[in-house]
Image 1 (cartoon, rainbow over the protein chains, first blue to last red):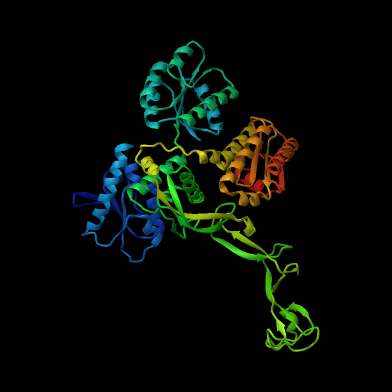
Image 2: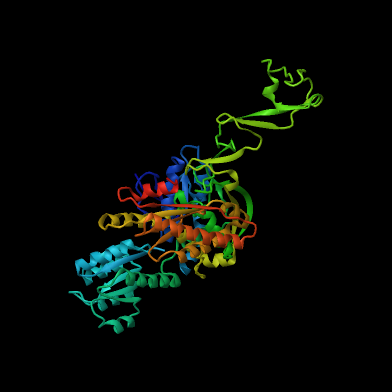
Length: 111
Length: 478
């Protein structure tokens, strides 16, 4: 089940576990990434992998956390683009992704 | 600056020779080798090298055909290696960087690489870590439309704070560079800042989780106990509270001088201060040395030597936004210079190679260090930017005092490491003394009232010990 692509409102969300192997080339092709929150170090490590990638489409990809435990590290939350609690309603994420993509397209078109 | 190099040559003996030269050069990393023209074309596409050593005469195609591929595929610099000078004019028409006629020695090789490095710096062919991270940060701030780019408190960060995007791109041991990069970006008008807070970090590794203790000024032990001082007004006796507890009853305080009972604080006695006694050496004192133990790098500096860090939030400027959008090229290479000043990894690599060389040739080489013992006081006074400038000046001065084959790096802001190939310990010590004299003169002359104290030592390189172990011993002055 990992990774899984969620289609929502014409956007593609890649949903994955932080510890499972993740092909970063797939990250470049989706609109956003949703990671199940497990521990702060596991999430941080994955975030590190994505943000230290050389491809702009990967390192600027919107990154959301899916809260399963209710107990989350505030520092890690602030490093991401938000926390999702209900994956059947991704409307709040869609708004954030839309804004980021619109501003990213300015950088992509000019770089 | 490290440049990825590709060697293209069909002669296996020459390939091995060139490979050794590349491996031993601090600015080069061997990305790959190719034995003919078609393999070369594949490698150029896949490896995207910064520098290509190209043989002109190969069995399947000429080097010039390979050069056509190079021109199409990217900005790599090319050094032609040929057994004759016949193709020189044509080669330079192709815009090559240098032309080495086989056989050539290490000095000629180094000369060619210096030219390559100069070109790369001018042309920005190897984008520095600082420029890359500054760009990523600006793009992050822009894409997230952040009014304020703020540090996030984090227990898992070495410095105690993380900056989104920036810190994730740095190894744990380099996280303090986030602060430096932002400071330089601000200086380059890409960002403006607002002060949030200041804090102190380890002067060796920038760890901000420190264990503070009061220590004995005589023996440095932290095994000290503190007690209140008592001033008995009627007889003017002043002493620690334990002097007044001879009766054994904690509540009864009897003056050891006049034998009267102390009754009311503020009326017949007072507690003006505290006094400390060292359990190790029995030294009694009132001004302990406060030390900050760093469990990350195992140092224990006095608090006045800690590094003061400023925590700021940042705001992107119009210029920063233009840089994020690619309208302006970021070139804030001040850190690039500093990165080379403090380049322990490269030094370690060179030392390993020297050890390897010494195993094959009977020579005596040395490593040495000089510590600028009280320079942190000066750094504290003149601030980070000026301190960096001073370090660069000191490095230039030191470099003018050593041979071209010697190596020197700052291990940190206070210790300088030297590698003296084919120089015994006595000669190394002589060189060291001369360097220390010059450094002291420069610092004392330029900073009135400051008296620089230096110490240093040298040790012969041991071929049976690893570079790590010898550097550890050098750092710990063993």
